[in-house]
Image (tube, rainbow, N blue to C red; front, side):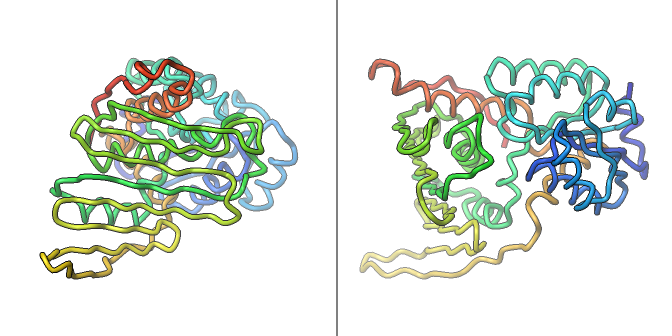
Length: 334
């Protein structure tokens, strides 16, 4: 078993593996292979085609099963397998004392997510959830711009074409869960009211959703997401009592309107935005938490809370109107 103490030794090379060699897993492998102080032990995937591609792209060893990767000796793993496998894979790794970063959503169900969190707590290993959008420099700039502001409303648009890779979840779990997490992170408050209108226009699962929320602090928020738009769009707008902030998460342009006058005039400025690759920043944050033993940037509890709200967005239209709006609050760590 790999202990937290041994993995946290200063200057120690961390042996890391990746579970899943699809698009996201291959990106994890690519980034990890280039990080200092990291030895990429290999990538696991049952599909020969995926393993062959990973070998060509990254040049690292590959394994057909998780047991072989664990036997090779790893301090930490990142899990980029299909959502329905997150629970099984995470528990298997945690049982061996291996630190885990699991891609969003943390699991298929809230119950499975809580089991992962509890197992990591008991084992004393680091558990982080891969809500990579928090590490987008444009998101960080928006977060900084609204710091200490009295937030009134948040509007997020996340749309694009149908992804051929998608199979086990719909647009709410695949896309909107990013923005549910951002709403909770921006406001540092629980979501307590949920109103949702998901629909299946052309796909088997929901491919369009209009979601509305109210946080415990009184912020109103809505998300517009779909797989029907022929191009990608990712925008965030936040209205506060003192300013209006607009962020394009793809072009990484963030604009702030402020100094509102009674005659309708105001000032505007573009805010500085970094150029870091979000996935690289996320993985570095995870590995830093592994080394230090500190609280990870996105905790397992936060991942479960966002998943719980996303599932309520799917369940709410099935319930009577009188009860559909209520969401179970979960304390968020800012």
